[in-house]
Image 1 (spheres, rainbow, N blue to C red):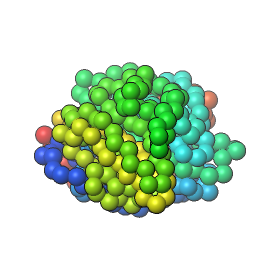
Image 2: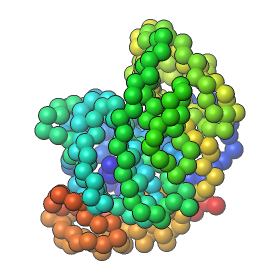
Image 3: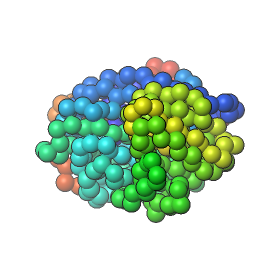
Image 4: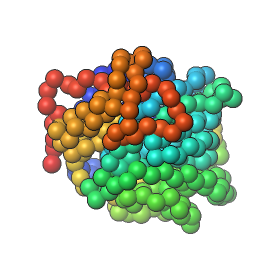
Length: 323
């Protein structure tokens, strides 16, 4: 998915000292253009830039909206798409064509460069889900682009259902390959349920509340909040309120590398991000409404002839880099 902000901000992210549990409130981000919807963004935030290698969390819906995101580029990251309702068609320049459905994960690795498009299907009347980005480490960020689709089997406990789409939890390990250790899972808790989860103490974790109210290791969280739990925790205690709750559990070891994130690019320096933008713009001819484009670093999505999204203007100041 593209970050369709009209004036995207530079985001400099660096590993920092871990603190206690934090409850990160979402901020509303209106996305204009062809998608015309508002998302609830919790990463990056003023409080925290990354949870493990997870660097971007947009939570949206349920909305009665059609999604049309024309071809756009990515570098240095992986996109992880997870839906609760609706269906989205994905096409990319590496030749992959797939549908994103509820309970199924699509992971696209941009590597050194890829372009893709996302369009909700004709049968979709309501969209509800999350768009997640993962920063690729130095050793993997210039690799070849790739794509993995996986349908995780349900795991049922006494008072919960779960689907583990990345990493390992509840005795289940996802086969989806990742460049750094990651955890990604959906859990649905019955009203009043108390679910203890054994987790890797080397990981930091984020619990995104989609619906209901939840207590996470003694901290209250409302719907749409993201609860950060630092490394050193061996057990996460989740407790639902008077209504059923649905959450996404994200995790990974502290990333340990600084990144500069602007628009759809994850890089390491100002000059690198400028180079990514220039390479994308070199593929585009014409204005925003009638743009055409040719093959180049990011390629052209196979089977999609929509006009691409031109990159916005860079800030008038040098993008900051934190080592």
